[in-house]
Image 1 (spheres, rainbow, N blue to C red):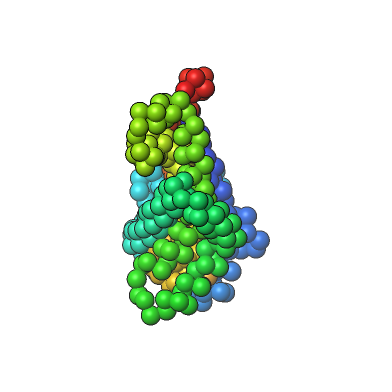
Image 2: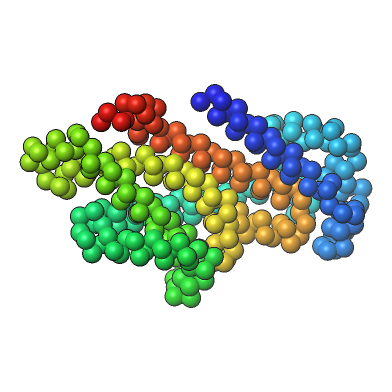
Length: 295
């Protein structure tokens, strides 16, 4: 656990250095580009000081890291507002969209997987659905749902556009894990005692199958927030980190871009880490593979 935590910190540090070095790697003078593309009237010297371009690279990096640890993410070059305040305004809508879409995807996947185990016709539907959704990512599903729900002002269409691509993979994963669990000796013993198939699935097979899903859920949770939700927000014209990042890129608001990338990376790494931890907690066989073989 400690090693994973250290790897997480080291990865975030590398991302921090990369995002902070982005401006200095740009060809030409970023201040001239900023002024030319945005037409801002802010003095060049003030913009250069805001980006710490007046300091040597090592000094600027240490200064930025120290200030960020204190909760100071800098000032937006365009709006002149604290970056942290802007992030707070846009963070909650993205989190809400991500959690809603993941919840919808989880409910749909569990339902489809259990039906596929119990009824043959749903086995075919589950397989077909998995292939179809894998071939249609949210960037394509989003506009289709948007066209069908043009007058439906709600978070549901955007959440469905994110959730649908996951349901195919998740449902097939859950179905496969449940089938593997149903072959274990303790499940066979429960079946010999006369328990119904539905009770066996829900009581003995479903919970162990959720271990693999937990890892997928955590990984996808980070990907949803850091990527898919951002694209979907822009497609559906919703407030959030995605719309903020696109707007910041167009305006060359470097402090805002850097901070948004770093926050997205934090959520992505935390999602993967928590997913792995949840998988180990749900399915202890991962810690004792020899014991798992004897089941």
